[in-house]
Length: 305
Image (cartoon, rainbow, N blue to C red):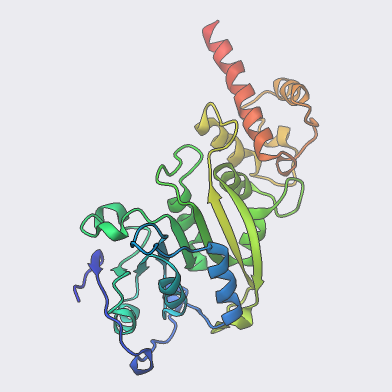
């Protein structure tokens, strides 16, 4: 096995009963999922396809943080290929012992957030361009992982996935799926829903893990897509979202008064049939886009005078 933070390794399958599983490490936010029911819901949500009889087609899966390999084993049985990214070297050794003779498994040791996955997969054509992500990710880096997978409003990920199935903190799942006007709807909701449709799959209690985390979890499925009416100036939309949600209990016009005069803001909101007393969480994603585009056209008109 080659070592190093950015080394690719093809692993070999051995009897997992001979492998000693390392203890969970707090520094990596590790909690081993042990619920067969939850595993089944995760795999079912991904709707994985094997290659046909000629070896063509099938899903190419990216798994972030395979841990002990409990999910990996099911993915290997149902997908064409699986690329697993694991930062813990001890776990990489365990995964190597478990899955090495599987021709459809490739192990990448390193920090997912720091790796250039397309470049590292260049020598391995069968594993290139994974089309689905299925993972139990570390909760402390959920935001950065989502951003790397989806991109941002200003810079969407051009290499989109068909589906992203993640086990995340329940509170985060509720925010990702939240509807406008609900207490869970916030800046994260707008940013992610601009880039993808989100489905809440199921709850997963803390007791389904070892050791049990302090919070409950949930499975979500994101399906990246282009929004029907995009922002004409994505950076402006990102700025408006950031400022609009900066003080959630305040009305939108108060949060944005540093960049937009109140009279102009009220006029634009009324034109869009939005209550001038609305708060940021009251606007849908499409209303945020319309709001941003309308303000942008006003500024462009003023700049040409």
